[in-house]
Length: 627
Image 1 (cartoon, one colour):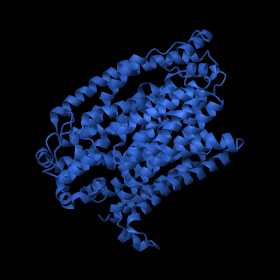
Image 2 (image 1 turned 90 degrees about the horizontal axis):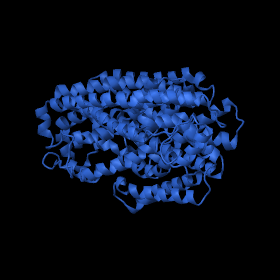
Image 3 (image 1 turned 180 degrees about the horizontal axis):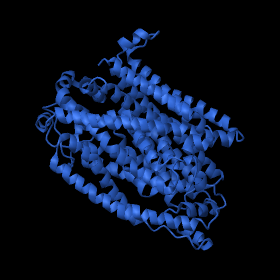
Image 4 (image 1 turned 60 degrees about the horizontal axis):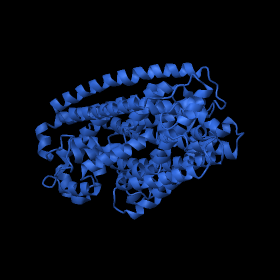
């Protein structure tokens, strides 16, 4: 597709606006690190929730999810459990409150509130920084690949090359586009920090919402239920499944069967059970040290942190899935013949840009491309912001230059942002496709993260040494174990990675001394987690009789289960709207209403009561290491 002048001007105007926002906010962001990385904790929860939703509306993930909807239809709403998307429900119900009560700047700094300042704490502090940087590099390279593949279709190199004074081999054209757009994103996040990210996300998400609605409408106008049924196998339009997937594309689209075999989702019930098993533990571990955690820490209060996490699915899912299902439906009906002629050579990750080129009118195409570009830049910028937060606050200021002036700190963050982007770009040159790096991040790398980070919340005896050895064992296993299972879905060997990490956690903990008692008591009083904390809780209550134990485990788990159903409804509703399934849509809306009412009564109302009691109790307690 060759873009028209108006489309190019819209995209250019968007890029200029993003840079201008960064320049405008530069002065406010550069006051101190708290302003730069957390926006001074002044932003309301709904703006941070919108920003978080915008960060999740990334271009690489959207390309992947359009492919999933194309191939798996309504059943594709389960596959993002691989991430898992329902981690936002755990955050909403209780984990965001626990995390925000720590009142720190980064996840690595949080380690100090849990493990103190001994050798074990120093080791755990170091390993979480290492993990954060590896994770950031992985996410940035994932985004880098997606934006390059996407923009190559709309800016054909044979046209662009006329204005570029050097030659580029065809296989590296996507990388060149990736470098260009990542440079712009890096520039505005360097200038404005968290404030820049949030305000640009507001602009970006507005564009994406309009675009999602328009694409959904275009699909509904152009594709009837009869046309869709003629181009899809039986079972495509229902989210329900048996032991096996039972989607037979062989007569309609043989290449899809080849791709489905590569995905290894055939035993769908087992896959879903594995996703749920991994997802529960991964969610209980809390957010990984990336932009998701930074958004929680940037909230004004623990209650607003919970509301921010709960608002993200509400804001994100309906416009995003209108777009995803709209593009999938259009591609199935109108591209199937062309795709069949391509045979196994088709790249399913290009369905999204191909659909834009075919169905979106002039002018709107520029707006939509600006929106999708915005989605990429939002995720990229938020991730870039997470890396210097750790390396400046937790390395530079702790070990290299503790007395650095605010100006020096901000300049250091500029330099680190650039270096992180350069390294992730280099990695991107060696990655095969979006799905491969996505699978490694969510299954292999996170497999090494989960055990240590579940135990840190729930077991008092777990110490910094255990955290270090558990995380180190997990990270090394994530690097090594995949080589022993070539061609295997990382989800299948995730339990092995988790067990290796868990052994490192337990051995490292039991052969070393417990964390200092004063640190544990302070942590318990401030955060008030449930779990295996009885010895510490007894000592905390003996010292401060007004302190109450958190006995809300059953209530929280019930609310999590209801919340996951609620989130699935938010996902299914726009999908049913696009494919015009009336009765399932009505049923899903009804279930959404019931689950919303339950959450109002059993989560929101009780959270208000709990937070009021907590604040009253804490007003009479002054902890020795209070920030």
